[in-house]
Image 1 (tube, helix red, strand yellow):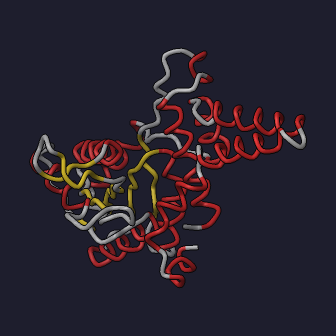
Image 2 (cartoon, one colour; image 1 turned 180 degrees about the vertical axis):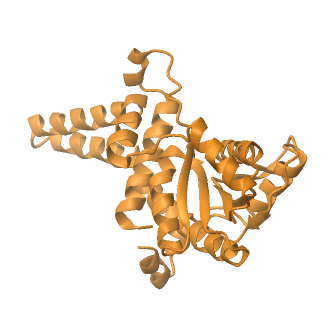
Length: 269
């Protein structure tokens, strides 16, 4: 799909196309279709409206997101303390392993700081990558340029490098600042780390983003590097079980992220 968009010269349309095929747009269109059908076919019209309403309800529930993550995406578990200890031992043995943090977006200008700032997704990923780097002693890389929907400005990885050094006191070893999407994250990160002799990548990103990211990195590495997932952001963040099936803003965001990843995996974008 990426190659088709490139051939047609509409790569920059990816964010718009994603927004049009993900909730709530299709479900809102379904409501309109149902309303139109009420006049000639009252029963069918109301059935379509009911289905669209249920779709809108469940598309904003944390329970739906958890189901998609566990059953459809098959998100891998977080690293265990034993695995972190193994990585620390490997770092002490000077094995060629690198932590790679994937960008998730940024604010071109945060008025309170007067400079560009990472959005919440990227900042959470960077924090975990830096923590993992401190715990294990492994060097950390960050991958992220200017996304298709972002205006010209400072690449995301450069923003991350500043925050890592100034706020977390843990400078990055490598900065990949040319990629526009996950596929390019993989291709450019592998190309950056190969000359350094890296043979294993500990990949840091959100759980819902991990399955597609691992697939992209494995495709880019072509067997020359082992890709070890180190997902984060796996907490359910729901106070009680009953709230899992009540629509919330967080639930909508989580469902949309999961559906976005499923769509990306299906069309290999």
